[in-house]
Image (cartoon, rainbow, N blue to C red; front, side, top):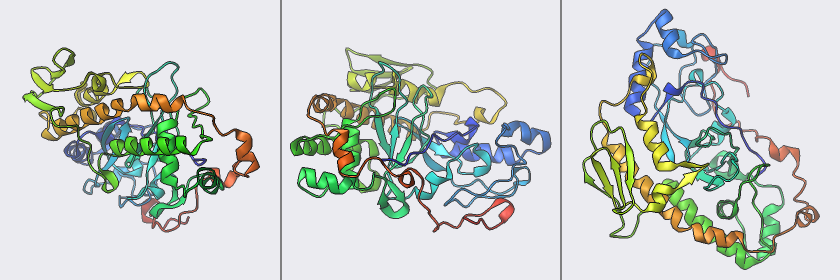
Length: 385
């Protein structure tokens, strides 16, 4: 997948929140302020201030007047893969984002998938490559940058983001038609981290390829959580987590009772929660602990970050139950992933060179020309692409 994009650089944390109501309240508070107060709430950076002149993001209908004069309604928030297994909401306004990576927004549609490399951390547990249908921020739990690799270079599922000649080569090697989704599935199952970036070996044997693709499809379906028309993940009956004691309005602590397979949020209790779900890590960070921290960590008073729900929303409970399910199902496949990594032999780089797949041409490493978006320039001007 030669075309990759660096992570988004948001610049201000208040434009992301776990719920839509919070973002709308923050927007209303900001546009209701004037002069120095608006500037202070905005949190200016070198890239963005209320006086910055910025074009609209591709595919988004937001204002392009300088934010200092903005008085309109809140733009419709979009789903953001804020981190591994943590989907939140983002204000999709280019005036608020330091580095938004417009090339990603041009290809983000209902058929796109994003493979997100996790920043390398020596000895850290967890998958090296994750998949999301939501626009990804692209950083690991520890804040390390990882490359974002769209599956397609154009909207509508057009032009796979693969090295030219790779699909014909793999189809011939493995004795059947290989698609871009097959390559992504294999990568999800077989990827491993390295100091030089995510590494994905290709097997020499067709049976190993078939096994890995089937495993990768299951892992991808679990991570997508029903996106693209798939089924939402579910554990077998008797193993599904339920709320056994109500979660309080403002929980402050998260803990796990191994003997009872119970997750506690102060006096709230959820069970059964497999130990593998509690221990599931990416980049050395427990996913359940980080998910909880992103929703309960105290914010600095006086800023827009301090605006949040008055009490724990019901949808957060539903999201937590689903997250437990996702992590438990992924952990169940760890043994299969380990077995796949021990298989071999692997295709040597020389075989890819002989087939003309390597070296990858520079044009495949750059974004494709996408001209079917109407993009408004600063101050309402027409944007020439």
